[in-house]
Amino acid sequence: DVKVTQSSRYLVKRTGEKVFLECVQDMDHENMFWYRQDPGLGLRLIYFSYDVKMKEKGDIPEGYSVSREKKERFSLILESASTNQTSMYLCASSFPTDTANTGELFFGEGSRLTVL
Amino acid sequence: AQTVTQSQPEMSVQEAETVTLSCTYDTSESDYYLFWYKQPPSRQMILVIRQEAYKQQNATENRFSVNFQKAAKSFSLKISDSQLGDAAMYFCAYRDLYNFNKFYFGSGTKLNVKP
Image (tube, rainbow over the protein chains, first blue to last red):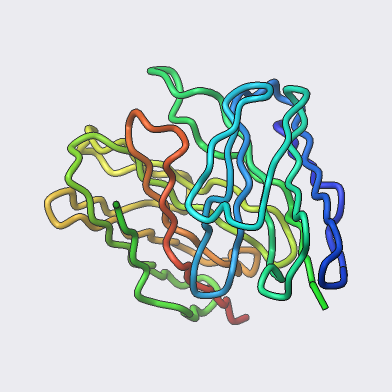
């Protein structure tokens, strides 16, 4: 089974702190994603990566950056955490889409971040 | 941009009964994928069922089935013989055929299952 592991389930940080959220997948997926989940808003894409050292902005990249130094690991970085970044963060991965697969997303358990 | 709408923020069903969750979407594409994802409380989101737009036959996975109405841009999920373990948030999602990064999610429907 595909396993996507997020390093922290719950974090509490202070405004202005630098925050690292780590995600590791074990299925050799090329694509990795960071989503933010807020009640009533569904999932919104922050950043995605389709290869090592490759990244592209999603719909809400402001205040975030990412790093992908190894294929299996995709990190989300909040350079200076703010209270409006309090949220649930979901990491996901997928194979590239082709005729053999639909590119479905495999998710981690999520990291709930509270910024005080 | 494509939009996905789930008009039912919360629903309840009695154990062993059938419930239908609604989803509509807006797109100008003719080929795409549709998904239902389930997110149990404090657990990871998992795929329930998928539908390729070019397939007219509705997808079925055990107790889960969809009613895909392409012309109406509707993609509802039917859960038969509801079980306590079905209680979760359910998200409808749309993806363009060729843009792997472009998933559009609805706002979710919370399903409660009453014993």
